[in-house]
Image 1 (cartoon, rainbow, N blue to C red):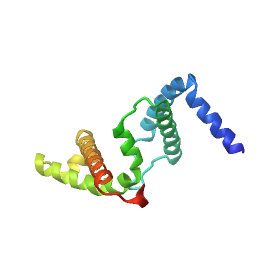
Image 2: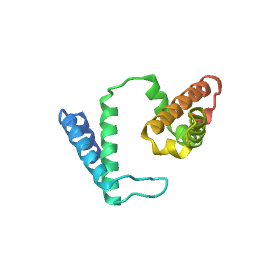
Image 3: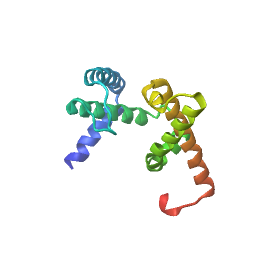
Image 4: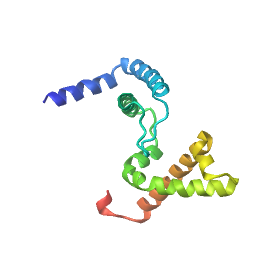
Length: 149
């Protein structure tokens, strides 16, 4: 019962008018924590200060929950991505490696330079998400798997 009350209070904060101010402050704190903690790599297990990493993670979760609770964006794209998050989680890493390889060949750039460049990393991530989106739309339309729904 106590957990339900705490969750109700938390979601009450998300629904209140103060939620926007709290989200703005949370984003500022998140930027400060990110600058203090420096670069992290969850894939390589590099977190620098793990306490700051956890604080930043929980602030990020709060901001995402607030934005999703407010329903600022009502799009089928985000709904499809959200409904298929496990599929995306399973496929994004191998697909991103293929996308990075294709970008490196198309632009005559080393793969390590693509991973080091924020611009090319964002392009590769966006390409990966778009490819996965259309693969999921294709699967949902033509391949009916009852156990995945």
